[in-house]
Image (cartoon, rainbow, N blue to C red; front, top):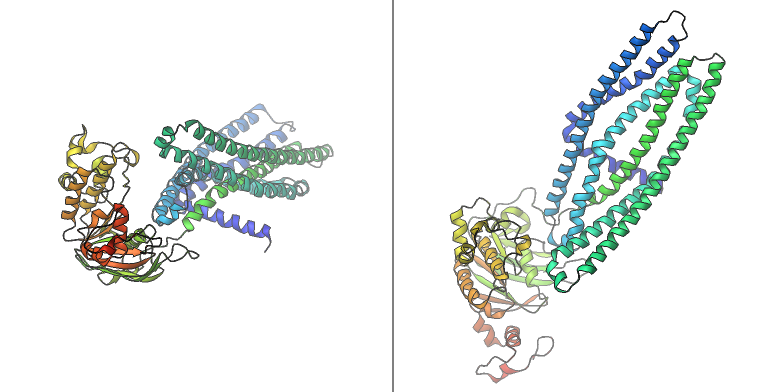
Amino acid sequence: MTAWLRHRLATAAQTRRILGLVRPYMGRFVLATVFLLLGSGIGLVYPQALRYALDETTRSDADLATYDSIGLGIVLLFCVQAVFTWFRHYIMSWLGERAVVDLRVRVASHMLRLPPGWFHDRRSGELVGRIAGDVATLDGFVGGSLSMALRNAVQLVGSAVLLFVVNASLAVFMFATVPAMVTIVLGFGRYIRKLSGGVQDALAETNARIQEAFGAIGTVQAFGQETRETERYRDGTQHAFGRALRLARWRASFFAIATLAGYVALGAILWLGIRRVAAGEITAGDLMAFVLYSSMVAGSLVSMASLWQSLQRAGGATERLFEILDTEPEVQSPPAPVSLPAGPQPLVFEDVRFAYGEKDGDVLRGIDLRIEPGETVALVGPSGAGKTTMTNLALRFFDPTAGRLTLGAVDFREADLNALRARMAVVPQDPVLFADSIRANIAYGRPDATQEEIEAAARRAFAADFIDGFAAGYDTVCGERGVKLSGGQRQRIAIARALLVDPDILILDEATSSLDAASEAYVQQALAEAAKGRTTLIIAHRLSTVRDADRIVVLDRGRIVEQGRHEELMAARGLYRQLVEHQLERPFVDDDPQAAAPLRAGGER
């Protein structure tokens, strides 16, 4: 298959997908098409009316009343055509706006179901730019260009037929120039599409860059890098401007050449037609009608060329959006999910292996772990041991590459994804709050929660006192990512959010790491109380926070190397004790002098 044919097929497939956005509103589209046909039909009658009026001037018995009637009829036709045109434009504009809204929601909804790892490889500013900028390109195409394309198609076909009706030989001569016009359109169209995609890429990159700067405004200002970030943004916009100018030059060249070709063809037809009028082969009215129809054909071809460019721009902009929509979520609910047993259930890892990429080594290597209902289990180990990966698998952000996870004997892959995650709540090390009220942030997992339930969760997380201290109380707006609150306040609101859900499984990623000593003591008590009756999985970086865990699981290089209570592991003199001594920066003193042996590379003594 040639590159040209592949490009044609790709363009056709892209066009079908774009037009598919209108399919849910086919009734309105058909109505707009009816108004289009009526308006275009009136436009095709106009040259015939002028033809008749001009030929009437050659009759000796014609009077002014006849011309007045013809003129009035033409004015009425134009008035009716204006009404049809208004309805066509309004309906098609509605379709364009509706298609944009639907596609934005569709893309955003699909992206929200993609795994976190997919977002790690992409910049959030670029993704937002795709939804905001690229989708907007469709508005102009569906709401304007598509309507014009249909009108020009009807006008082109109708004018072509009437050209042969007026004079077949002149029509043959005129259409001999069409292949040259088509060659110009196709030749320019492919390159313009490529340039248009480059402009969209440059804009997305620039938007991503400035959004990163806004997201880290404190760091930018603290290091005095405002000027540098401005220059980076200026460079990015200048680069996008340069690409846009190149696109503009090619579009201008295209329009100039297409217009010149059209007028050259029209001039040749006029020259040939005047000679035939002089020879008495056709009337002056025939030539007038032929020229008008020829202008319609030429205008339609030039407009179709412009619309081809519009399609290329829309295709270039939406190609990346359709790539996102074509990305299948790695984790999905099965077609016929198995119901999870009611009440707390054991969480089991069975010979679990996991790698983040096909070429990457296993992060987890044969994990076997059973966590009983109500048990508090802490995961500890050196950096990169696989602690966070285990919690990501527990939340089913990923599926294991081998082995399985079960909840109440139900394989995670067989359960409904939403039902599975509804059994869990997570408090991350760096909690994210939304630019909304404290009330909305606490109730994020349960939007239907009452004010009493929200306040109860806040009290259990020891957040009620500082919330009541704000003038707006629970209506206080947290700011983007909670920037208006301190780190400890954000952490306690995140804990309250998890407690409000009342999950069977509570996942804590060093949930007290941002608290001061006084607050940490209160929250540790609150978490201990909240952990009663539910499974609690803790990722521990500060080992002092997991001394009271029912069981401590020690990971090293993707394997479980130890597990037990704090006292048991300390007595075992294994990796856990080494980690404790390393954090204390001194040997742990007990009755065994071997416990004080120094820690060597690789975790051995």
